[in-house]
Image 1 (tube, rainbow, N blue to C red):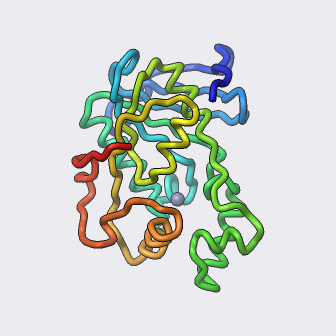
Image 2 (tube, rainbow, N blue to C red):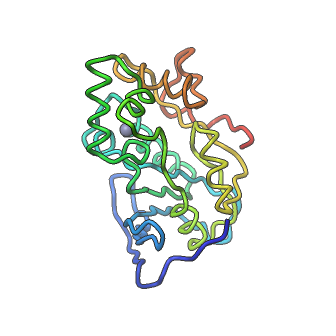
Length: 220
Ligand SMILES: [Zn+2]
C-alpha cells in the first residue's frame, strides 16, 4: 500500500534531553489521520537496515499515570531502554490509539465493565458496540520512510502488528519480544491478549525479568 508522505510544513524536529539521554524528537502531523505523533530517534538510522523500532500506541492511563491494569507504561520504558542499549533506534508514539483506537472515554467505559462484570479487554469493547482494534499504523510507516529507515526489528509481542506495518511497505526483518512481568493487576489483561488477540506472551507461563526481553529474536 503506497500513500502520501508527510508535508514539510507538518514536521519539526529538535533534540530532546531526557533522563535516558538525548533523543531527536521528530514531531509530525499525519496527512491521513490528522493526529500529531512523535518519533523519538536515537543515533544514526538513515539508510540503515534492521533498525530497532517500537511503534507505541498512546495509553494515557498507562504511559502517563503509570496505571498497572495494562502493561503499556512498562513497555514504553522498556522499549526506550532497549533503544538506548542498542545505541540507535526509533520509538514512534502514535496518538489516537487509546483503547486500540476506540478513544479515551470509551476505554474508561470498558474499564467499568471489566471491574463490575468481569469482562475481559475484548468482550468489554464489543459489549458496548465498539470494535476490538481499529488502530492504523500508516503514520508509523510514513515517519519511518521520512527517517530513511530501510528495515526494522520490531519490538512487539503482537504478530498482527508485523503484518499491519508490512501492509504499508515497512520491511520487518524480525520481531523482538517486549515482555513485562506478570502482576496481580495485569494478569487478566495479559491473558486476554494472549488467548483472545494472539499475542506471544511466554511470561504468563513463568517468570521473565524486565530487561531480558530483547535477547531472543524470532522471524517476523
Ligand atoms: Zn495501556
